[in-house]
Length: 217
Image (tube, rainbow, N blue to C red; front, side, top):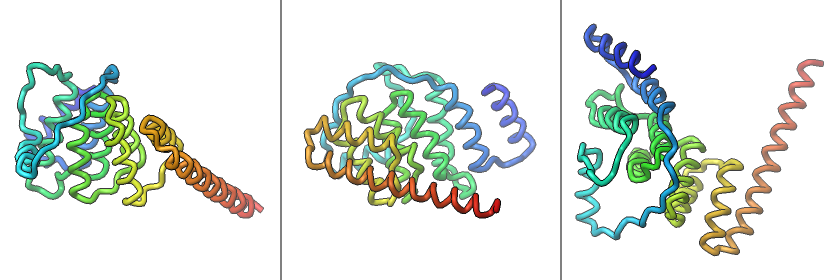
């Protein structure tokens, strides 16, 4: 009930109760449940920018500029508004954390707002935040769906640099990307890596079961 949540938020601020990051994350998670998946659209890759152009674009991120050619659902606008509010807040206790980034990236990816999702992802990278696997998966899938396969593979390399262990969904996305890009050698290497990871996970599960049985005895 997003309307009731908004009323409670207003009551908090009227009483002088300062929201924190967790408060915002709860609100964001409520909005995320209302966001509907967007139809698949192939988006052109962004143009190459000079260093000055990239700086100008970055400093302008999250400004409330209406694009008359692009219809944005109200739920998406509300999530963007809350993220801007957190990002610009002076208090440390209101700054986005890994949960914030995960919720917003996943929701923006689901809504087909790939540019917004990438902006939040870049924020997480700048702040050296290690995201959970589903956030990386959702970002990769969003890029893959709109034809930006090379960028999707860039997320895969970020995961490896961060030491994030992929899951079955990750491997499915990456193998499909490799097939589309014609990376035959990479496909074999990734398949071998997947087998090693699954064997390791199976071994860990077996150890947990053995410990559980030994405790019962």
